[in-house]
Amino acid sequence: MKGERRLAREMALQALYEIDAVGHSAGWVLQNCFEREPDLPAPVSSYYQQLVTGVVSCSTQLDAYIQQYAQEWPLDQVAIVDRNVLRIALYEFTVGRIPTKVAINEAVEIAKSFGSDSAPRFVNGVLGALAPLRREITSALEAVVGRITQGEESEPE
Image 1 (tube, one colour):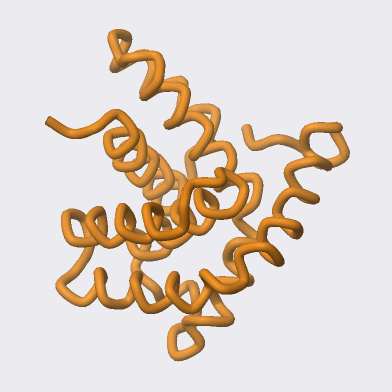
Image 2 (tube, helix red, strand yellow; image 1 turned 180 degrees about the vertical axis):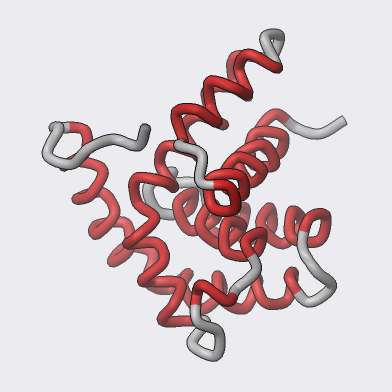
């Protein structure tokens, strides 16, 4: 049986995929999920919602850092699954304060399940390069999260 956090991460990946591929709003995707899965355990639904809203609100900043370390691929050419696995893990080990090694390991495992054959290596390489910048990235992302919390930027729909 999967752990609650792994399930929440996989659900967040699927939600972020839908947001990127179809263009649905984060709010619509979250509401739709909760309607389809009314018996979802509270820790799963809470962490899932935290990941989706957090990644969506910080996606511009997350993408800028990812792009620096995936220079051979323009971000819009990185597979949607890979891009969102990277976003989730980077968000987790910065704003989410999940231990870096845990976030990277989870990302690699999810990339094995959902990505192409080369996805785990790509994800590991990019996140491994970003890991030493954890404090810098955390400060930048927390500033964004703080502005959103204070209402200076609009929250995702």
